[in-house]
Structures are given as structure tokens and as C-alpha cells.
Length: 88
Image (tube, rainbow, N blue to C red):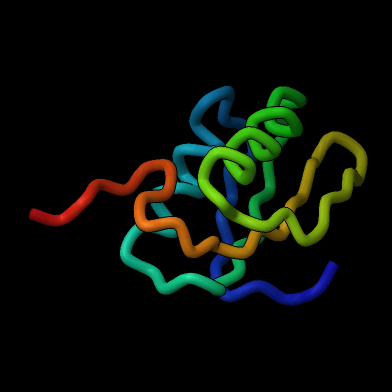
């Protein structure tokens, strides 16, 4: 798996925490930044797909090695992504 700008280790955490950790890692970061999420909860596969679809992010790569799921996600350009709030 290629390099990432941000590493998010959510191994041992259960839904929805892995995706919430990814959203928190993206908060305040510019569009185009790439994060690698590692998680062990099988539900993360669907959670990441929904996170990307609803947040306008790009799922660049996904893999599984033993019980660890890995994803490379590029932050999208939507004005409000999952886990972020509009500034007043």
C-alpha cells in the first residue's frame, strides 16, 4: 500500500469509532490530503464506503491482511465533510 499523509490506527475499536477517528483526522486539513486507516472491525468496510460516498472523499485503495483492514482515503472538496462543521 502506498504512503499516506496521516496514519489513523483504529485497530481494536468498533463501529462507528474507526470512521469517526478518520473524520477527526481530516478535520481542518486541506482537500487532497491522504489518510491511511487501519481497523479490525469488519463493519469498517461498509462504513468507509459510506463515509467516502457521503463526504465526497475518494477511496484510493483497500486491502486486508489477516484481521486488519487498511484503507487509503483522499479528503474530498465538499464544503462540509463528515465530522466537520461550518464556521460561522
